[in-house]
Each structure stands twice: as structure tokens, then as C-alpha cells.
Length: 336
Ligand code: SAM
Ligand code: DTB
Ligand code: SF4
Image 1 (cartoon, rainbow, N blue to C red):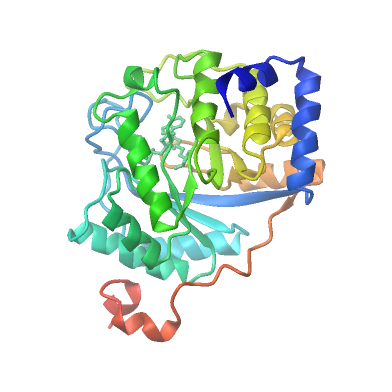
Image 2 (cartoon, rainbow, N blue to C red; image 1 turned 90 degrees about the vertical axis):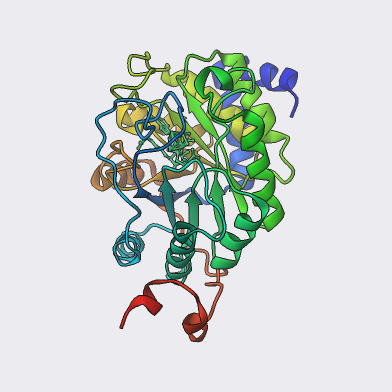
């Protein structure tokens, strides 16, 4: 959808915008369901990139303890717990510029993906830049969706990150699409952008072909020691408006109300759900930052009559158990 149209939609009176978004939401998502996704940082901190919002960049003094790639066994423990908690999507993040085929760490990640995908949840990873070969390898290992955010408008991006370009982000997304994985792509509000940057970001996302399968809308969690540590919060009504426009412009996407929920009131979140958000990160930790407790989320969903999205039974683990011996990596083959 073009910028001019998005702008017109965005600047309607608040309740007209909500009504329009709600109609579309009810057409495409009539079930009152919220997808619960569990996030796990499998490799934390020490990242070479300079994203000015991120606690994991080695270029900022955020005081974060860096951690090496988690073992497959530890990841599996967390993935099983997530499934038991009712999550239908397990998202693993790594603080890397990107991954390269033929490296030990990429083989380790492929092993982890193979094993997690056998649990029957959707598997999402976010590992930074990917080339075409890496994208195909991840798809073959069982990745459902790849998260790679464009974060803001093309114009504002260089004010936020200098170690890679907006075009680099788009190239990775193209490789993900070509490999047949779903694209999870969204952005952050609160990076010093204005409303036009937010709408230009939605313009880019809504012109993806195919549309992204999910669109995370993060509110900046200001991280100590980062250049954006003292950024002011974004008005919740602006977040609601952006979610509503995302729902209208990308109607079939899951719109994920992502980072920053801890700072939102229940009423603010309720408006976000009404406007079209239908997915959240679930569990008290995101990658390095905090998230509402499971109890608080369950209580809110109950009050609003929202139910956890049922697992998609058509999502087959990509390999039968019998094939595991032939896999080059994975907990299964590493066990005696
Ligand atoms: N290194 C990979 C990358 O950049 O794609 C994956 C991890 S990165 C932490 C994933 C996304 O989390 C970022 O693209 C950004 O949208 C979001 N994010 C990171 N730090 C954040 C913060 N402080 N507040 C809100 N969102 C944040
Ligand atoms: C996304 O858009 N948001 C998640 C997920 N994709 C990887 C990450 C949010 C990170 C929030 C800050 C932190 O925990 O460090
Ligand atoms: Fe690294 Fe990703 Fe953080 Fe940027 S957002 S510093 S690429 S972990």
C-alpha cells in the first residue's frame, strides 16, 4: 500500500480508524485468538553491529553479560517448557551480524533447529544476515519463519545503524522468501522517528511480495548504556494507530505486540488487541529485557475473552524420527 493511502488511513479520527481495522480483523481473524510465542536468546551479547537501541551490541557499554551459543540440550529443555506452557511458536535469537554455511556455529544452529522442529511448534529464528545457501539450509532443517526487522523507514535507518544498510536487510529478507520460509518482519517505535517514518516502514512491509507472515511491532525498551537510553516513550495511542494501520495494510499477517508490553497498561494492551494485534511474546523474558509475567497475560486474556491460538496440526516436523541418525548435528546424535 502506498504512503499517501497509509497516511490517509492513519490520520482518520481515532474511532473511525479503530472501526476500519476491527472490521478487517474480524474478517481475517474471526477466532479471538492470540498466538503465544516464546523467545529465547541462544547466543547473547558481543554483537559486532552498532544498532543504537540494542543492549547486545559490543559497541555499547550496556553492562550485559555475554553468553556463548547455548547447548542443544539446554535449548531443548526451554523449548519443551515453552510447548508445555501453551506456546505454539518458539523463537530463537542470536546476537550475530549473520551466519555463514560451513562454519561450526551454523552447523550447531542447524542441529538445534532440527531437534526443536521435531517438537511440533512453529520454529522461528533470528540470526542476522543470511545468504541464499544459509536460508535454504535453515528451511531444510525445519525453520518455519525467519525474523529480520527493517526497524524503521529507509531514511531513518542510517541514523540508527551504521554497520549495515537497509538494503542489506532487504537482501536477507529476499533470500528468506526465496528459500520458502515465512518472513517475520516489523520494526520499533520510539527511535526518534516521526509518524511519517513509521508509515514509510509500513509502506515497505506492505509492498513485500508475498506479504510478511508476521509483523512485530516493538516499542523501544531503552537500554542503559545505549545511545537511545534516554529516549522518551511513545504515546500508546500512536502505537494503537500504527497497529490498526498494519492490520489494514497487511490483513493476513499476524501483528505481534512485541517489546515494551511491560510498560503498557492492561487498557492500552486491550486497545492494541482490538486494533488488530493477535500475537505476543509470552514468558517473563524477551531476549535481554523483561516481559509481563505469564499470570498477568493469562489474566488479561481471560478478561478480554481472548484464547491462546491452537497449535497448527498441519505443521509437520520436517523429518521423521528415523532420519535423525543421518543428520550431521543435533542433540539426538550427540547423545551416547
Ligand atoms: N541480530 C539479529 C538481528 O538484528 O536481526 C537478531 C536479534 S535482534 C535483537 C531482533 C530485533 O529485536 C531487532 O531487530 C529489534 O527490532 C528488536 N529489538 C532489539 N532491541 C530492542 C529494544 N531495546 N527495544 C525494542 N526492540 C528491540
Ligand atoms: C522482535 O521483533 N522482537 C523480539 C524478537 N523479534 C526477536 C526481540 C525483542 C527484544 C527486546 C529487547 C531485548 O530483550 O533485548
Ligand atoms: Fe546485533 Fe541484532 Fe542487536 Fe543489531 S539488533 S546489535 S544485529 S543483536
